[in-house]
Each structure stands twice: as structure tokens, then as C-alpha cells.
Image 1 (spheres, rainbow, N blue to C red):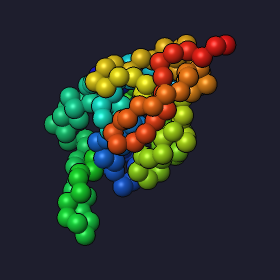
Image 2 (image 1 turned 45 degrees about the horizontal axis):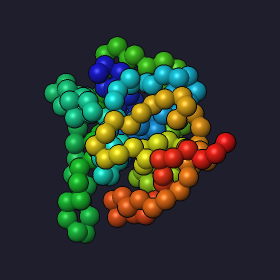
Image 3 (image 1 turned 30 degrees about the vertical axis):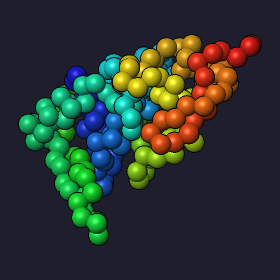
Image 4 (image 1 turned 60 degrees about the vertical axis):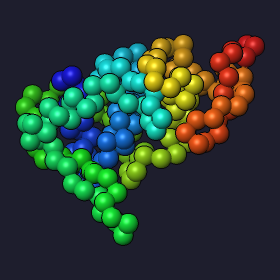
Length: 178
């Protein structure tokens, strides 16, 4: 969980307006996915599950609780004309003993820069990682495997209709003829 905590802090430090919990979860997923594509290893080494609204690191809540207790992150309400629209996680101070490598920071910076504001339209930036998430059944672990992530799933899969979170996606779990 140490790598996860340092990755969270690094992302929040590079996000001056803070990040929502779901945006943070997505940024961690895409950072781990991009690193996996290049080096066949993940930055955090964690397990992600498919939730209705995002890929979610299983240990994220535990890490946020730990960082909050250490007073290295803070939360602030996001207020709009409609009232409180959620909470934003913000960087306060670094945690001792940063354990991220230069390459891990470079990959994470690339992902953070792709999503300067809110994390949306993920399929435009990382279509293969987004589809890896979409084709995983709800509440199951999202697999990180070279034969699945290091390629574009939408090229390898035939298409059929799947209703997911009110959006329509075309996906089928059969491999297309090669």
C-alpha cells in the first residue's frame, strides 16, 4: 500500500485544484495501465475492480484513510449554485520516503496532463485501457495481462450490445478471427 499512498500524493500534488475520489481512482488505473503496457508491471501493484462508474483500486479507501490520519491530504467541499457537489481531495504535504521511480513519475505525469480537469472521455485518450475496464464484468477484478492490455481490445473482439451505466457500448467476449 506504500506505493499506492505515494502515487495518490504525487497525483494530488500535480493537481492544484484537487481531485475527486473517482477521478483519482481513474488516474491511478490509467497510470498503472500505461506503465503496465511499457514495462509489464504496475506502479501500485494493486487490484482494480469494475464498479458502475469507474475502475476502482481495492485499497484506495484504506490508503485515503491512512493519508488523512497522517494529515498529508485534506478534503474540501465542491460548492456550486446547486449546493455541495461532492468533495475534493487536496495535497497538503509530502509523505516521508518517496518510493516512486523517475519512470513511474513520468508515466503518471503523462496521464495527469491528459486529464487536466475532470477525468472524462477516457476512451479518447486510452481506448485499450478503457475497453479493458468495460469488458470486465461488474464487481470483478480488472485483469492486467499482456495479451489483453498491450493490444487494442476493440480490434480483437467482435461487437454486440451491452448496456452499462446508462451508456451503450458495443462489446462481445468472443475473439474475432485473426
